[in-house]
Image (cartoon, rainbow, N blue to C red; front, side, top):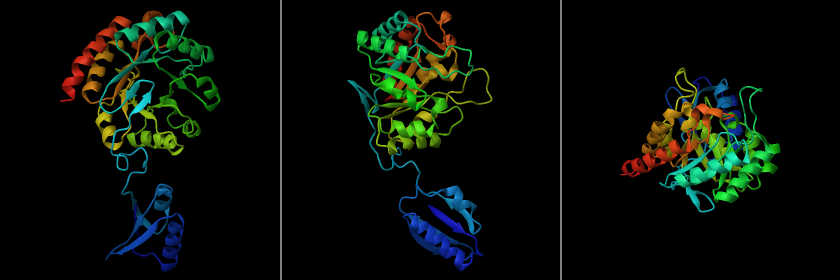
Length: 334
């Protein structure tokens, strides 16, 4: 970190600032110029509030030399992280597809979809039990019973299961869940993230509706600072002025996140577009851009789905998508 001081800074204020910075555990090196004095901070500056320093009367500007997400960043971890659950390994070049219904509705529904997506090539099963919904009057999920049904589908198919947690109090329901999903609305639920840092399970962390890539990585840092480095990043579309789609899928996030971080990156084209016919082309774009996986909503009867039927594929459409992605991926890796 570099701190640029104003040219009229008095010695008492200067000494107070240097003493305060040193107490934060960094070395302070002074570079005196003709117009400004610059302080170079050497050490772990992640605990220094950059906005607080910038607000000080004597400070003209503050700049970070290194990114604040040290554990999630690639600089200190150059090799790709591979996140494993059972025999499934996400990251490092392979592409895995997570598929299943937005909401678990019944044992017959989740098991029917689970068998269909496995047959088509999915390697993990998703299903919503606790559902964060914009309206309090819409279907909120089967909650704990939904997870029980998801576990039943896991036993019938052997697929690892992925489902979303909404708050810390629900954690005891997730003992048999293989991958815990943190949804876009909870990306900055820092108390939840800190608790998940003590869980020995992979965490699928979705980007918030209006969050930057750095903010996504800082949320991953919260989990990693607690000791859990098994994190899968998910680009699921961001909110823009465009209304033709539910959100705007940021394909550029895939190569950028791979450059910024060693963590695997997957894409959710279902929530990004909100339109079933756009899921396949966006999946192909994500595969071509180097995504480590896709998470696709599949329902056996989308027209009568209790949640997000408009963006859900039928099992037949999903099978077609998998074949298309399998054809594109080898070309993209050349």
